Length: 260
Length: 353
Image 1 (cartoon, rainbow over the protein chains, first blue to last red):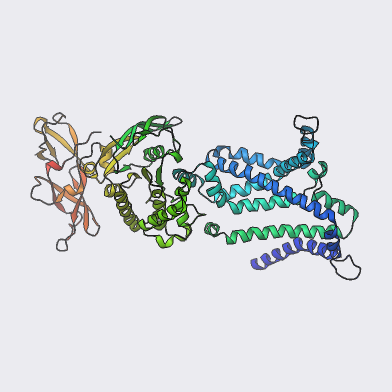
Image 2: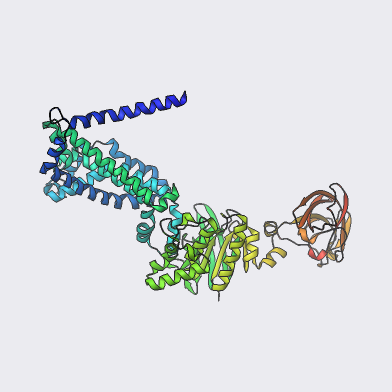
């Protein structure tokens, strides 16, 4: 009876999540009347704006990931090593982006960094890109911090640090050669989550008027019928590919298997 | 002049004084053990030598150079940890090479040194393995090779055998001692296991409550403990209450039997009760030649330990434990039976509290 209930729950869960996806995918293939075709996908891929916005968002995602890694890994490491009493405060701070809407953050940015401010970042494209990257890093902070912190929990940070110090290593060497490689899978999962957030983000990019993928999807969705679900399927495929990559990295990382 | 000199070290954590005025001189190539119960400050002393803790006051000198203010990575000190602390992302060879890489040793020289170190610990064929593919004993050997590879001035061992099973522990401690002797490296070994400390040390420092209670060779620590704590912590100790009969002659009585301790006058007064201390192996069951003090006893417990039989017997108001060799032709006495125990007055230990 219990087994039957478990199977029932599993099937219900699968249907609940998969049916909308199947429906959306099916609809995206119906552009040509009467037959299934990839016309909507071809249209999307032929659109130069798709490639321009997608590559722009990818570039910013890469910049966000690099910035996030440089910000979060040393912070989470230092908190674990030297300031364990500050952990609740840091965790609270990293959770704030989930509570404060992106629109509030971006309005704050515009007020603080407009052309008449002490740091007029919105006055140039590159300045706005930097601002957008910082905004994305803020949005991704809860995920990146938790991923890295979970990774750090699986290793004995204090003893490994002391072992490396006794062998003559300085802080940079310890972080780059001991800590980072040992939390690489956690960092990668944080990075892929960041990528997924940046690719789909609309509010900040739209209000800062940058040619990102999120506003492009919104624009397409407002004007076309079949291309938006095709775009959504593409976005899902990218996310799933990222998840698959995390699994692959974990599987091929020998020392990570030891922790499992 | 001492090679490693710890002078008046103090360490406080908030209001807690963990190490109190600790001084120790260690000669080059000496193997010194810090022995004591949990919380006695032995690990804190080791961590101050390593540079992981800054002394509240006092100085640490290595080979004439004051390293008190130096960071851990500048001290050229090798360390082995209880939890192995091998880098999980690196192979055995890479772990051993780590310190050399940090030092900037050229690749050919580095590879030769790694091979030499792996030969030293007998694990050359395991160089390509990751730490998780090794047993605990093998991991600790690799940790030793890694600590020794950059040729440190001092080797610190922080309870490196505690996580290993009994057999591996004994073989590895012998290996560590052999390698230490071969390389002549000055070593500090922290342990709470007295047998471990006694078996491999040139000198033992028994610590209690942040101070060094006594420092000396294992033979001296065991046979001439200066304080009650040292006597109790190192080995088993019997204490017998005795009444002073003639202090000027050193005459006391236990269970109605008078005898002279033969150490001159006692500081106690006539009629005072003093405590006599004896190691189990100093007491014989029955009369024995050279053991002039004979006391009546009742057998309380008999523990058969293989080659040794430990007997606990009631003597007057106290209970003493004594060890006797197992002899197949002489079965242990039955529990509750009357017996005699004997010891030599010269084996009685006098303790300062």
